[in-house]
Amino acid sequence: MADITEFIVIVLAVFAFLLLLGGVGIYLLVRLGKKAAVKAKQASNRIATHVNAMGTGVAAEVERFRLDLRREVSLTRQAVEQAQRDGWGLGDLPRLLADLQAQADVHDGQLGMYAQQHRMSQFVDHVTLDRLREHQAKLTAMCARIRADLMSDQVRHSATGIADLTSRTDLEIEARRHAPDPLDEIDDLYRRSLEDRNDRP
Image (cartoon, rainbow, N blue to C red; front, top):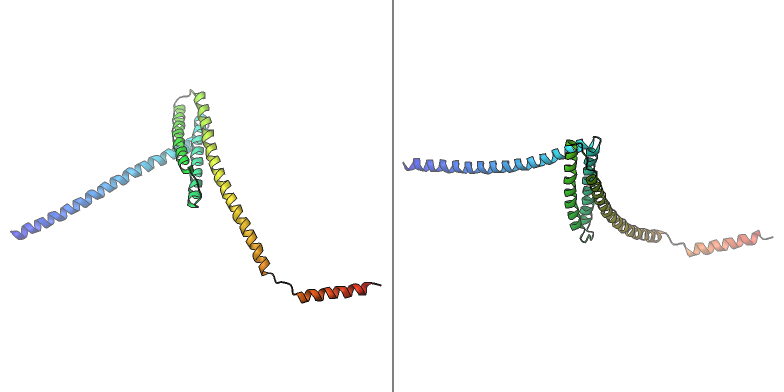
């Protein structure tokens, strides 16, 4: 009887362990599924934006604004990240970029809502559209200014490095040149003086 109870306890322990593993596996699969669903929704929104931007009219123009803004913010973020990797002193620029990105996300949502409303209704709110265009211009200009400033710093730093390399190269080339032999110079001067005497009538 003791052998049977031990066997049943072992089987139950193994079964409980397998249930625990199965539960953890299901939990991880559900989390992975949720993340995949979020990514799929984001991808479908981006694809829908690209497709809608191919059309004509105000709604397509607004969708193109969204794409342009995403591209500008992405390029600016890449430039700042590259500068951080290179060890540039950026000051408060990363925080400013985070604020700019948050504002761009808000603006993107407003553009999306405006485009959706315009596709459903043919009545266009020109005042809001003008304000959205103005905000778009300001946000993209800020991104361009940040990138231009970073590029200017990088070019200035590169110019310093190039000037240093040029001077080092000149020194190295000068050091590698063979110094003229003084006896050859004296011989050359003597030969010239003899030729000058012979040329005189």
